[in-house]
Length: 254
Ligand code: MG
Image 1 (cartoon, rainbow, N blue to C red):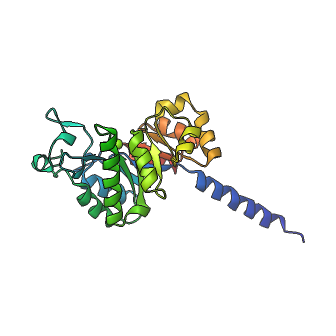
Image 2: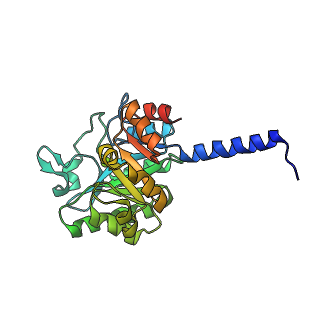
């Protein structure tokens, strides 16, 4: 059978376009889309704004307080005291820069439930001991499952004890490692879905992009804010770009 040339041309074009679409880097708003009016880092507003601009996912940071409440907040300390050493009651008066209360993870996930399609890039912060890291991971998974958000969640962490615990108790949820020292083959061996490394780590090890692809691992790079750097990482084939400038990134990768 002989196909007319035009049909062959159209079919090849469709193939090229679909491969290109698959390979396009996805954008993740770092601490939500906070770099905009009435928003602030890790606020409910930042989560909502990330959803509004249609990014792949929104990243946020989680600590377990001394009395075992999971809260969404970035910094380790408030007024010199470690968040993880405080009880939740000590945190309720604290206000974010946009005036919101510091959200509990539960409040944050309740809001997320209404924002269909947005992936939750859940960073569990490092805690004081290996056991506390594992406990924080278990409580995080419990809460995600209780809220029915397992399908929309990806865990990321600098802490290897927490990472291994996520992989053990939630084997179907992608877990990414942030700390930068493990090579793709080591991550694969441990069961990670991929790496989520600083842009300078990836510049030093650009062969890791291809190595990850070959191993079926994903690559995420943080925190990439300038258009040139976003393009550089997109050209390497980064699966995800985590950024404080998500609108710029969406424009660069489109
Ligand atoms: Mg983070």
